[in-house]
Amino acid sequence: MKDLIVILILALILGSAAWYVYKCKKSGKKCIGCPDGCCSSAGGETSCSGNCSHCTSCHH
Image (cartoon, rainbow, N blue to C red; front, side, top):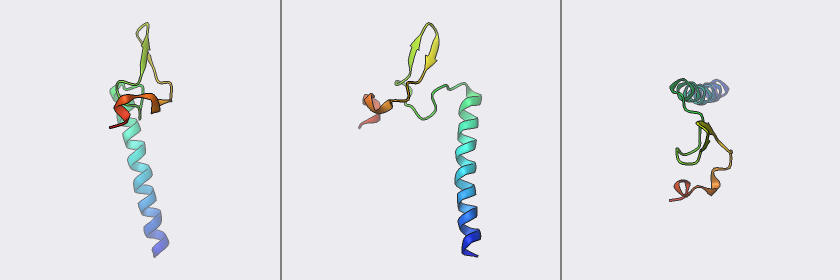
């Protein structure tokens, strides 16, 4: 019974994460997980460097 509860909790967490990624991609967000000011844009293309530790908005 404990195994079933653990499996259900993990499935809920993974399902929620997948839903969040799906929702963000559908809304057009290119940098999932990065703060909005961290992405660099060049020539209209937005790209995320993957290194968001340098952003001031990450550190409060």
